[in-house]
Length: 381
Image (cartoon, rainbow, N blue to C red):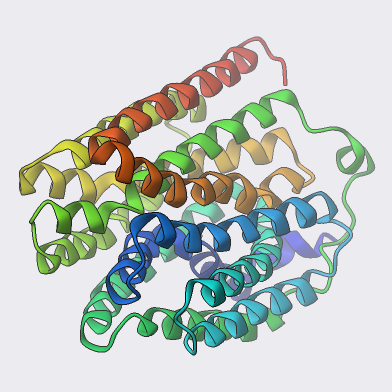
């Protein structure tokens, strides 16, 4: 029996996967608050604040690149519990230090741990009966978690300091580690030809497109707080924008689930990078609050909506679950480069330089997805 499939399709399994997806993809929610807290409350410049977050994301990438190809051979329960538990311990230790030299390796350790656990989560989702629908469900959980996060954590940071963020992270990871005890020990046997066949080229191209979109997401989202504050919009209004963003993020995964049979994944992918780049230009360039606020409110929603379709597409291209088990790598490679790159560009070319960079990355993602579409139309994987 396919244990990975039965777990992902059970009520208990879906609940665990929803929590684990939210905890594992916390960078998609927390990035602007994370960089902002490190800059404002720890005194780091944008470049060094971005480097600390990048250390976390690079750790997750490395762990995912190691775990994903071995997804069908690893003990899923042990990796999930140990991964989230290790991240909890690392973030708990981060609450006790405030120097760059201490926070950097602790973030890297947290990322290595989390990437291992999250690979088990996404591989399990990919081997469910309907990966697109289940990813939409866990994406909705991410949106719900974002509302709670934006409503509670930024005000608490203002009142009590930056350590509040790491206390929240440690608690979230710890609760998730306990929940992951419900994971199956292994995912069951995978068809021989699927587990040994090289990944199709179309799958690699889709992975490249997702990575580039994740890079654009991280470039702009990591600087969202700082752009608003340094443009004079005020921390309170920026926090309100983030809260609205959380509510907006409840919608894209639900819509993606409802529109599964109505929209082509490749057509969605072709439009999304252009829309994402357009919103990025508005956020980075607008001297007026209203355009900034509107674009920022829907910016993350584009990624959530598009990634749901692409997760389903990649699951079909590679039924073994190996490609989607690498979701942390494809998402966080872009995310890892983004904060440090954004901080460096912002310090040297201003926020307008981020707009130019976002357009270039968006063009690259569009080209990757266009090639996927041509190969799909030709019936070539």
